[in-house]
Length: 112
Length: 400
Ligand code: HEM
Ligand code: HEM
Ligand code: SF4
Image (tube, rainbow over all chains, first blue to last red; front, side):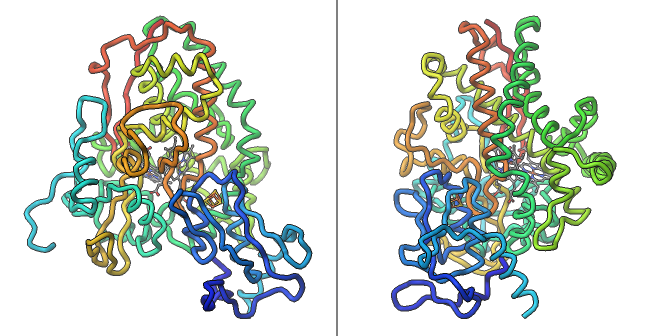
């Protein structure tokens, strides 16, 4: 994952905390998992900070909004059911420039 | 456990009752993390409970890459290989998976539906005109997935016999020496090299062309990755589907009431496919070995760095903690959270394609073959081959 460096830990409330790497514009993101989820476990394995699997075997995203993180965009793209959406809370709209942002993140990290 | 008496041999002997080995149930109750001896003589820890299996498959300390190291414990002569998608951990795996995902998006797979329906129709016509009894294994369960995968890759169908002979050598364990397997791999790779070169010159609307042109932030699949991957899609893509489909057809013929139910309510077919995948009593592992990259604990058991872990999907899928009346085959079971396609980062890339193929294959068979369809021999006369991850039917003679 190219987004590894963006997330360094959790704050006291268990919300992932981030250092740097955010985009200049846009607000925090809300993650949601649509019911078309096929329970592949890919997101929970790839990004356990953001996804967990409940007693009922359903995949759940972090309840609280999270700071923008290119790693999330990679997970969105890796989901075989296209079941994960990210909403930019500043605009209320889906994080659309997903691919570009991921590319940006990767380039930024490759050439610090 | 260093002063051990020899732990039991795994895979366990297959019972003749078409049920999962009794050992799985016993271990789930009494020893959910059990030491076993593999066919190579190496040792491994066998996980049989659903919760442990799922947790292991998302645990980054249980590595596929470490299981490809030369000194790692082995199940048999062949492994996917360290340079393949199933032989890698994150982040190498993530990069490769992202590239190949482009060829397996939900949309791309769904777009194949009409073509798979045509192929199923073609194939069922051959079944209908063949002298009875007809072997559904060779005439349907094997040939349909092969045609689909060849179509998908863009491999000309005239070459199917050659390629199939090679992939048989690679996948049917036991009968072939390490050298023969190597040679067969070499032949397939040589063949694919030519095909890839053609696609590079002249792109077509097929998976191979998508792969040849797959790009990811300026990175591309290397020649070796491309070859390995195409080869994997070809071999895994049809062997697993054919085995699963063959076993599914057998299971339905063995449970005529459930088959009857599907005839009356074909809308149950998608759910029935999930149940057929879950119920498959002939899967003993379903996953490749993982090797611990550091000491870790599963339940009360300490797994040492370098030791191998087997996550048994077959056992997890029959765990009563998750599936009520787990040994009962019930096409209406819901919810059905089976693990037949694995779990975590290596979750089957072809899962949606395999589901679609199995659904279409069942629907076409049910619609087109008269409802007197039945096994042509006693079920205990069928022949099975034992691979490393599952038992599979060699033939399935039916009549109507
Ligand atoms: C019913 C049929 C199938 C079953 C039961 C099945 C099962 C599985 C399982 C259990 C795994 C995970 C193995 C592990 O974690 O050790 C897997 C991985 C994989 N399967 Fe399938 N499979 C099927 C069909 C297919 C098809 C049709 C394709 C390709 C067209 C395919 C391609 C793959 C690939 C590439 C992986 C490796 C993914 C990775 O490592 O990221 N499979 N499959
Ligand atoms: C990334 C590449 C590969 C993937 C994803 C993969 C995946 C799988 C899966 C999912 C199965 C279980 C199939 C089933 O019985 O339902 C399997 C079985 C097997 N694979 Fe692979 N495999 C890969 C490459 C290879 C290669 C290159 C070889 C050998 C050269 C190989 C040898 C075997 C053998 C011998 C079995 C056991 C077959 C059986 O149970 O009858 N695999 N593999
Ligand atoms: S990756 Fe997608 S399909 Fe898989 S568990 Fe996560 S949301 Fe569900």
